[in-house]
Image (cartoon, rainbow, N blue to C red; front, side, top):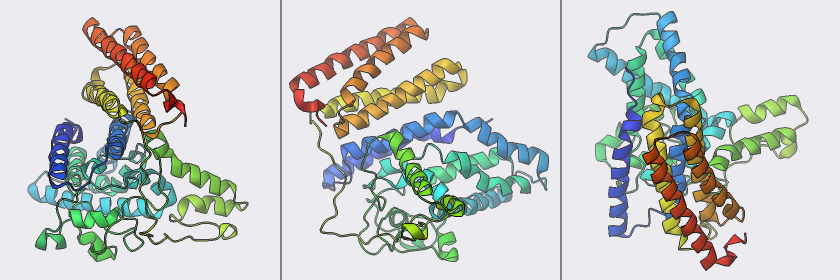
Length: 405
């Protein structure tokens, strides 16, 4: 029986985020920004929803090799569990490292690094497409004969471990820094400082970075994010923008070999006719500024309300998709993603947002009425949508210039 430990851990994630947020306010640390946190959590919801449509297929790949091509019959003893834990962590290191050293893989993984803050919401900022290739790195474990359910369990716990290290609240962990991946080590990994880039790829054990020469101790202040800031709260664009950059570069390259290299070379690589390799720039402290577009303060409550609707809808889908028919499943996922896009656009003050928001609210009503949900759900959801329409209309009436980009 497969157990989705990640989904089951979501309530714990939010409890821990709440604790860190309370600590942040108590200490006045400024670790959180509302717009950035909404963007991070939106990526996490989107990743879980899009993952529904690929989970079975990707697990089947590992399971098929284990069942038909495994080399050994391994017992489910404690020693095999320990060996598999080490194996999962070892191959995670190489998957993670290659995701930083090959452009086509970085195009997916870059999503996790886009936030210019560092808090527990960043742990949930995940790529919607990374799962399409990450599983391939673990296939040697299937060939050896490690049980597929055991693999799925330890892979999930490897991911769960990495949640808590996305914090600035814990400075150093003493002797554990030599063995485990800690908040200090992972802060380095998220840095855009040139000396920190492509360092500390560990999942659970930092020993791999120390052994393979990619370890870097946290020394100077860390500037978080990517070297070319995303400058957007749009969750869809966050997953596509680097692909867009790669395709543009490939189109500008007359040589076919260069077109291929654009996707296979490390980030920063360009053909010679475009200037060649471009190293990461040093951080200019005097001009450094985080992306933080202004927005109508009264929108905060409305955005939070809509985000909570998206969160509730996403959680409902996540825990019941096995029992849902394909049309309601896809429709619910699309409406949830539209809501997340709307939240981001509202926080950016996009001109198209007003028309899109009214369209989204109307779409929600039409979907709930025509997809034959229980009457009780229909009444509650339609009431929520009507409240949202009135609330949004009054916000626009109070600020008629808000439709100017």
